[in-house]
Image (cartoon, rainbow, N blue to C red; front, top):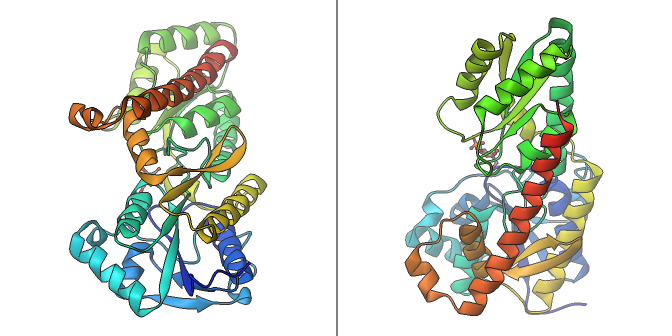
Length: 356
Ligand code: F6P
């Protein structure tokens, strides 16, 4: 199993933390040690790489963290690493510490960092960890299921009190501009409406639906709104709903409570499988990859392609960017994006029909 090319492999978590990062870190460490290399835990993401904040890991270092939320490696959103000077400092730290490869857990920003290091001679692989499930190359990101369950538990409580008082609650959830958390939580809590950037919002239809349901004796209403809909969008919506429906309406922003908590089985399992895959690929001599779950399989995609696809999916690719891409790449991205959008829309439509 040993590949002498890797004396030490660094592990880091970067960007917003997510439940499941610890099981991932644990599995990475154990898999690296099983290959006969040393595992280096880099603290505070790319910041720790710049500052040389790291320690060699043994089996015991990752014991008893599989069930713990947050990231025991700590995290940071490191602006310095976005500069060439910062990247060069990180490379120097790698060379000094005999780090021959890195596995980085996080979101798109983390993958950009991994690509920049790979480009400069440190092979890296990214593992998707974020509660937002907003990484287009993968169907699933570590942390999403735990955050979803947290949202569901919180909103179930809100529903109890809404029912007692015949109220509506407008609940704002995280997502970093992506509506997955709102959509999936909304379905699971039986939300009257789910409002996300992906689907045009029809205020009149929502008001009419609520008035009709109230007439039919419905007492509680939950409206789930994704963050980043606009400045104080959900607060204003709560006021508008109250004015137009005459149903007393409260507002709740769940905020960072969604990011904490013990990872669910789904997150522990996916974290472990993705970590194992990342290590195997690195030892096969592959790098500049992001680990993905696609159609139920743990697989991988070239980081640069994955980052371009993410922009393509989110409509952020400029005409110039597109002009530089091959027709085959564009066709592949279009097919993947259409499939993903259709799936999102299908779930949204279902909720529209089954919710009151
Ligand atoms: O990416 C995870 C996330 O929690 C987003 O949902 C949210 O927009 C952002 O991070 C919040 O970032 P911070 O923890 O830096 O306030």
